Length: 315
Ligand code: AKB
Image (cartoon, rainbow, N blue to C red; front, top):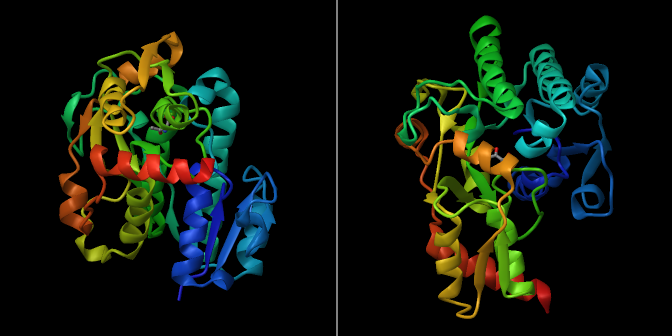
């Protein structure tokens, strides 16, 4: 039986992961935490504690109070925000991670924290980006992600801590909007398609990035955490992807359902530069081979589901 502490539970991944983990492992076994508290179900329907991950003692006290055996550390700033506030990002992303790892070490917890396609940079091969390749990112977020991957591997080799991670692509969901990411356009486009019938993209035509629908991302976390450790040749972190798309591909798919939908562009140079430094399409064979990663959604069936779910929300 698992008892899981989640940090950043109010965020884009955390909100939905908390709900799924409560269903999977029982509400009493999931301790959702976040520095924010509001009246969303994450904070009102199960165990919820406010937690600042830069306070190691506070993480330890909660881990101890609830006798947790797993920590899922999600609290972090995303790429665009991190680029605007690099030192805050360093402090929160790296300080929070090392604190959470230290608590995991003291409490002998299994540990998951997400890495990202942001862990790659302009000198990384852009197409079919290999699992093991050059990682010289040019963003603070990317620097944090590479350092985080190495730190998690260090805790595995040095202390035998069971650390596991994936490099998430842009995540698309109709539940909680992302905030401060470079790939956020791929979520906004669906919201605006339903609300206004048009979208102005800050990412340029022809800019390809990996994306994934949230149900596949959540399933990936559970599958990796439950994977037989003897099959894992890699740990921190596995390439995973479900599709490689540019803004016009998503628009064309939306137009199949909303023929009057229009897309135009007003490029944000900062986020465009970040996007251009990232891969077009990852090779995720290692994840498929070592723990059976197998996403169910592609651009086509994700678009059907997103539009349907957002329409229901509108009414
Ligand atoms: C971001 O755009 O910052 C994130 C990511 C790909 O890590 N969605």
